[in-house]
Image (cartoon, rainbow, N blue to C red; front, side, top):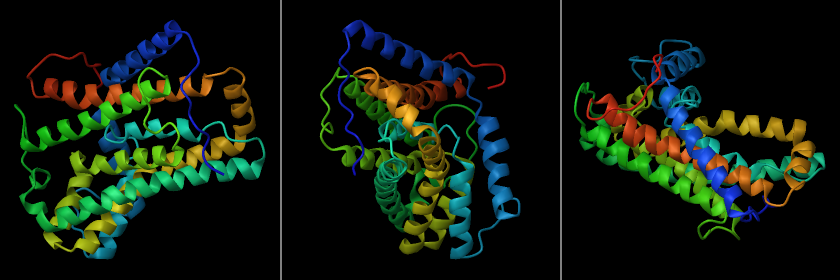
Length: 304
């Protein structure tokens, strides 16, 4: 069984326009209220430290096995960081499976495996690059940036800007507003979503990830680099994957019925999630980042 094909929604233009508007608004509001301090440190660092059994930040990584454990734990801890929020866009293609328990399970797990394959391929390749040239790359730097843009910041802006635009395009394609090159290839769609998740590592400024990055770069071992980065990416999607499976098993029949009740409803949900995730990614990493460097003004909630 393959994941159900996401066809463009058969809806009047005004309805699709409203979905786009509300999705863009949701992505914007999320950037305003998002607190990196809370998700990176309170959730991310504390979760990683609890999983490892010791303080994660600043602790030396002693050996490849310890590095692998650190990679997966920090990936899990970084599930809800701003780098990883775009992974929510992967939820839509695995919704609305068939009614039987077995078919729902297969129909949920199989696309998640394709998602993991895409993430592993990109993260493994980048791990090799880091092992070979990481000490000369912007992410290796530990310098604190207080004003202006650092090379590390520019790299993050480019990478997440591209990822965000791809997500927006896929969302518009799901709504039938632009051509969808993956319309007849649901597995390829999931591989691409996974590749975007793997691509987070290319621009990721998350502190614990950069700690792993420096260890891989210092070691210079391509096998260690590829393995550690794959585990980091798989840790990023592990919680989402578990939630998707549990939701599908618990309420898959009702969800499938709700999505099938109206033609195009599944595509509307898919498009909305992808556009919201993409807009958040672009605005957070390419606009709000400039505001954090005092280069422009951007509205930010007091707690953020």
